[in-house]
Length: 135
Image (cartoon, rainbow, N blue to C red; front, side, top):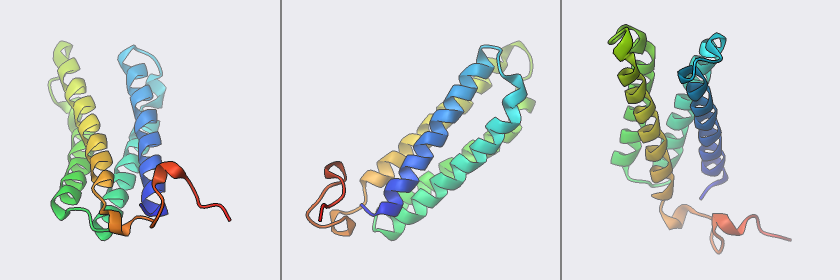
């Protein structure tokens, strides 16, 4: 797998993890002052997901999977921006849950896409788990 895909996948995962931690903090009634940070990191998450989709498509991953990952990023963004206007009040927890599930699906989509990059575009003779070649 190309280094750019590995880095993009790692950045996407770290951004997702930060989003998850912030989201849990919000659900438990903490860190409400960090909503703007959550939105900014969410935008960066989607941008990194789109970069991952583009890199994987260029490396030969199935185009449909790359488009699905791109679409999921757009859906997560849209839903995150409008969620406060959907079902306000006591039942808003359902909207938060849907937002979380969409984020999980988007992250899983990116991870699955990266695993679909053909072996021929990966570094010959090594796998990612083996690490860099030693001189």
